[in-house]
Length: 361
Image (cartoon, rainbow, N blue to C red; front, side, top):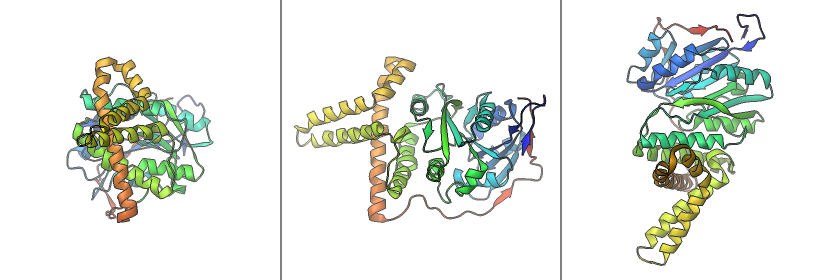
């Protein structure tokens, strides 16, 4: 389905925007307001409420956005699959509920898909001005920004914080993997790449992240929601990707960080290891020189000095996650990605109206 602009100009693809949410009342309104007021092609907007226990669903309904509520929490991948089944546009746009798009975002996606038929998907990154002022939040969101800004334009993976994919390609690989509750977007990107579909990382396709981070949430996310499932996918595929946070230089940083910790522990009983610990830590800093330089340029010396221990911890968590994945893969022979199937989705209410907006380009 396509729509023309009000001036009778060239046709533009219709966008089906899918926003999954789970207990996201604090950020959902800002997310939807940006999507509703953004100029660009005709689009439909749907919220999939993944069994939120706050006012997320009520907020979406009050804004006139079609809202479907899942009877069980199934994860973002399953929620997005549900949204795909309820929409009709040829281009699916996935936006996280704690993300605010820029005014030109939908126009940029539409133009790229129209002018680049050889690409099946495109995704962007967070901007360099995170919404939450906390130090850990600033670090994590800026780290994501810097990582994506240094990524390859010809991507192997995908990102659903702000990403678009042609429905035909999405369906050809079966959508998001069933039961894949963590990094479902990365798995989708790999499935698309393995099937021969091209994916573009657009460094200028930016959005603001509103999520607050704490040290605890960072550690839990890095180990159990990033490193473990990512490592399991790598072990099953039998090969590493060499992009974004799985690049060779990032992997070296992980190795050196964990070696520095191991040598520090050994130095307690064998002081000779102290020198090796210092050497490994220096090598970790060198491996992270590029990203630390970006922090230095953006936020200055004091901020960057505070980032060093967080980056060290981040890479320790990656090493721990990989070790746990190795144990599960070779010893436990159990997948961390499998989860019971949830029940079917149910409409929230008869009063939840479908939001289809036709605006001028």
